[in-house]
Length: 155
Image (cartoon, rainbow, N blue to C red; front, side, top):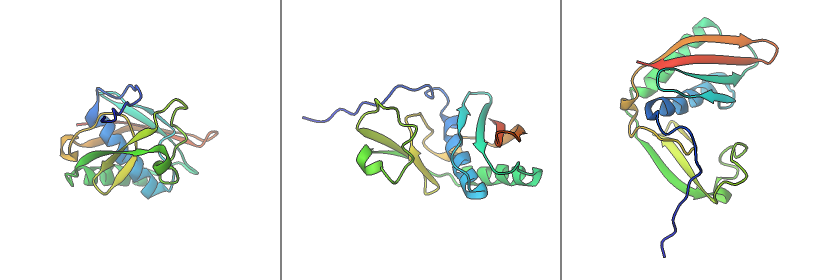
């Protein structure tokens, strides 16, 4: 008998280009700022926002470098693929903290070419060429919490 894979419910079905861009942004933040993936995300069709914990507020030059780096990855026309592994196989390879207690034993890995891979149950484009151009429309810094919020859209 073939095993039926059952994924958890989620709210990221409707915005594949924006959600795939989120993966690229997260990996670019890790590479440029040495931080973790976003601590909070609100992904919508027209504009989205991501929050990051950082030691200091990014300069305008760093924000521009982020925008340019994300767009460079998008233009590579990377394939976006999924694979399934067990939670045991994922241990030590992926951050399991956000995995709900009731998550299935099988988890889904989404890969954006050789640029990023992470646990994810959202819907994605098949190729980064379907995303469009990434544009940071605003950002702000909370000194007390050391949180940087970025708002962006795809054009």
